[in-house]
Length: 448
Ligand SMILES: NC(=O)c1ccc[n+]([C@@H]2O[C@H](COP(=O)([O-])OP(=O)(O)OC[C@H]3O[C@@H](n4cnc5c(N)ncnc54)[C@H](OP(=O)(O)O)[C@@H]3O)[C@@H](O)[C@H]2O)c1
Image 1 (cartoon, protein in one colour):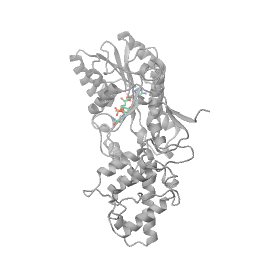
Image 2: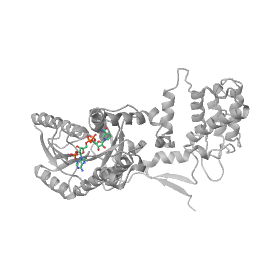
Image 3: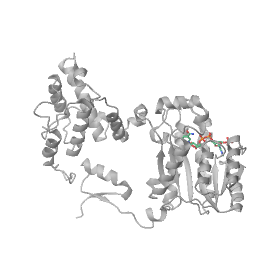
Image 4: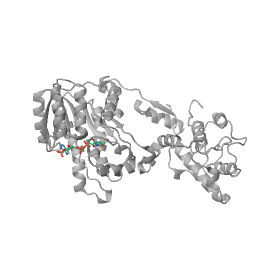
């Protein structure tokens, strides 16, 4: 009888290893190789970012702002026919200056009034452009904002925000199916990654763009959604400093300059493997220490990033928490509770589970703490507190509560890592746990 197995796509290999590390599987883990013609090969873009000098390159939302910066970037890459479209279709001073500069370089540019959500109008625009040359690039950079807390949002308020992005992208997708496009790039936002209170409609709209980029790649069509963080010098935030200030409070003051962000898009395109997963990328400077206040960022997905941030923000002695001070003046029970809370948080973070799933009587081995994780845990705990987490004496039935109790013994003696248990903790943990294998049909990491 064949062994039970769980299969992962080649582009999900990280998840496969994570499952194996957690010993959460039964039987074998299978990683399927890419299939030529279906996966990366058919969709793989050119190794270099090429922009066809004879073709036409359309930027919707390209009059002024970040969209205009994108058009300029296409010109830098070799585009010689640029079309800029917005609903109003009226060039501002910045756009007029850009067009003049381009003309001196032999680049011709046209300005169009077109509501991208209006399929008939978009169809007319595209037919006009195809008379100039083959359509080669579509950049969808149009947006409308209407921020409010979700309770205050209504269908009427959401519609324009979502339509311009989602319906606009769907129209462009449908109408360009017969064109031999090199690039179909949609401007999304880093808020789809980290969320942003007050921008539910905008985040949802950008989420659609990301789904569409993936769906296009599945069909062998070019598709890329880039989630940009704040852009410092061009576009909406540069024009609306009050909104920018508000955003800075939530996700930090860090912002990229438009040119730098677009250079990063180019780097990404050059190394883009062409897979479906690679259809979405984030180009953003995020201040993670600040972003951690966002509920989405408290998700276990971000644990590794936040941990790294913590390590970089530790004091000169490398410690962020003084456990001795934390339990000073507390009764033994209170002190142990504090330390249990800390231990449970650390274990939950390592296991990428919510803290609620950890309890005092849970046996470490049974909740999936393997030797690699124990090492990871021990090192970071040492760095953050100066104390070794007492895992080295882990017996088969050691519980989370046992660890907290042992830690309490150490801390209450105010003995920073000098007891016989402490060194070399990492080696001891590996050696002790290396011997262990779980029964019940599961397998452990080969290196253990
Ligand atoms: N600026 C940033 O910091 C930032 C950060 C992350 C992501 N992004 C993304 O980058 C893109 C450009 O941002 P931006 O800051 O340059 O925005 P912006 O200054 O507000 O420009 C948006 C443009 O979209 C046009 N537009 C709106 N509705 C349209 C429609 N239905 N059809 C055609 N055009 C329409 C607007 O012109 P009309 O009003 O004349 O139509 C305007 O020119 C957006 O997709 C945004 O999500 C920007």
